[in-house]
Image (cartoon, rainbow, N blue to C red):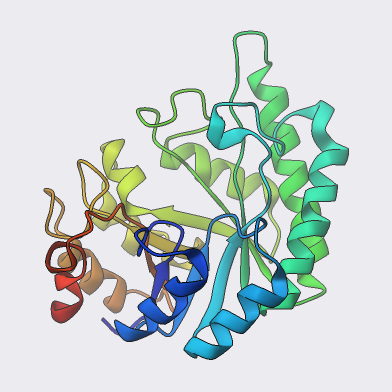
Length: 258
């Protein structure tokens, strides 16, 4: 494909230590990587690994506290605004230290006592705050919908909700992160959305479905989506973010046909 491919090394090359995954990605022809949460490694160690491998760091997530462990997370809960801003400062240190081009802001999980409208407004305000903060350093802010099967309590799962948040944020430095896997799990019209909303998308990720495996392990026509992306006005990166099997013939064969 014409848009450049990025390896999400939080999921890819999972049979290797993190600092060895940069060179593994480079060996498969990737020129950049993304890391979901790089914060358990030092900036210097990550930077050295990236520089040695000759790859850039394209995107990292802003710290999300206990979100992936089923907790509430930070960015959509009013009581966590100060903690979210502190998380942005941490992400800024890593983004600048690694020359990352983008930071992604995950929302949070809700329980039965949370006011969803208030949480959405808090999330919008926090994205806008981060967009302004990171714009001064030339770092783009993105945000994403996550399907409600894998994360049933996540703030929003549908494309229409993500686009509504995009419109409410209304900031030049904030755009949608479109995850093909999550949108497929929600039954969204992926081909149509990739064409019609390309101007509003700041980052694209993909995995096959079901199972979130490599292209060719499920039912999605990933190659056709690549062609649609190439024909669209989207000029950004396209990131491989899928679960690996440990078998390179399964996990990376798709690279030969992109």
